[in-house]
Length: 151
Image 1: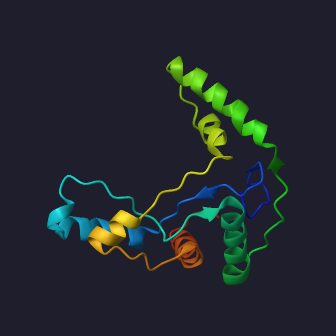
Image 2: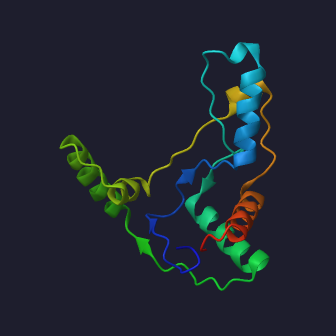
Image 3: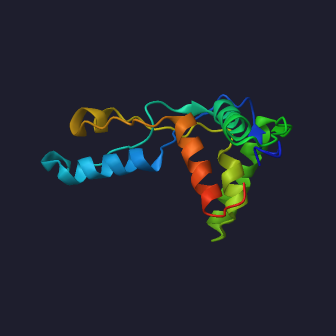
């Protein structure tokens, strides 16, 4: 969707998301498994800081263009924040009726900040995510292409 300029920005795009590259997450899980104080505790694992939706889309586009030579169209899909709010009401109503529609649920969260704080994992476990957004996206896209996934 980013490559085709069709990733929906709902609202300003300044809402933030926690992202986590798989190697970082694996590091956190291994640290928790080996740490005696981790038993029964809950830790958030993600990159050092959350990223804005605008930043995520920008980075994905740059990686596709600069690292893989793909043509990336400018993102043209900007929707007012109220679209996410309406989708949230529809999602709640449907789920109350026992119906889950993934597209509606995801749209209902597109103008929300969904971010976590990794301070506890850093302080207790020594968790230090080493791979940030750009490198993680490059590694992920490379893996997908090597394994026949369409981008």
